[in-house]
Image 1 (tube, rainbow, N blue to C red):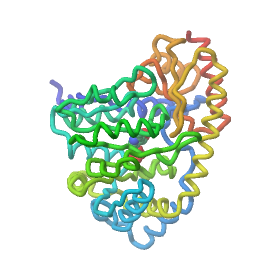
Image 2 (image 1 turned 90 degrees about the vertical axis):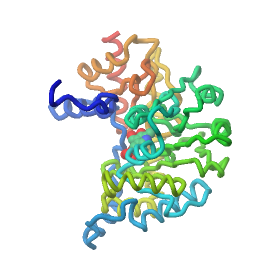
Image 3 (image 1 turned 45 degrees about the vertical axis):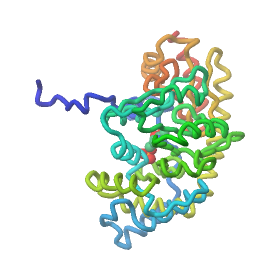
Image 4 (image 1 turned 135 degrees about the vertical axis):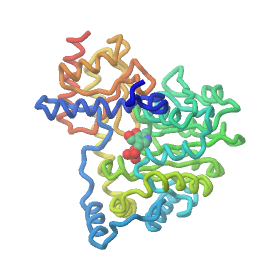
Length: 388
Ligand code: PLP
């Protein structure tokens, strides 16, 4: 055995496929190749200036030291106030943990709740990190595959067992952009009312919803679920702050205390300057979010009208976030292979659906300019003709 062999833990999960392929696309672009990168899961907008200025001012005022582990009191108060408004359920600052991204908060939730062998229910197609993180904490990801594109409560119920520790809901979804309807939220919530199962609501994209969809949280319909729910949010996507690494979790005090304890031994606290920027974003950033949302909605419509020109493609109708999940099954047998070749041959990066639990699909992120969207989809059409 080589000294450098990774631990069993590292060998037990996959690296993030989205980050890996996107990195390859960036490398090709840096080497001079023209690349349209539909792989990146981040807004192409700059962080609004007022958020940056808030961080700058904080630095000048000397807020360059460690903060409280779970976040500054001001930011925790701000998150609690915003979430209480948006979810119509009262949260206090003690029920908030601020982390270095929603991703870290999700991981701490799983570390705090899952025992080895516990099952965590995940709806397919899913965000790449959910099953891998569950494996990292010794849990078993239990995937619900829909017969049609929308998952029914019965399909979820069939997967619930005495070992079920948590269910993860992600609406709007990465990778599909799907937003659960009120009826779906109601039927999913009912499954959990009388059970000791944690509900993890990953609401990273809840501010990016497009007409006619409406965003409904299980807590809107059943506030009593608050006692078993962990809400995840992030400054990354809605506020164009991916690089600042700032997200939050809200839940019952014992859960938040356990997650904070974990964070105290891992990263101590999220960046003090990112916290200052996020406070400004949450307090005064709504108009920026609305501007971004409108731009994404137009792009969503543009992507659909361009894709409609390519016969044989199908997709899940995106209602939120900035992704469209395209079904290539009528045109190509191996989508993973196709995505690799498409990047090398035509300079377009799509993320193969395999990593999201749907191998005949690929994810396209439309966080790009209109011109790049049109050119990228033209290249997909050219690539499809050449490679099929
Ligand atoms: N959840 C989902 C569904 C995501 O797509 C992402 C990022 O891609 C995250 C959580 C984590 O975002 P961050 O760690 O940047 O807050």
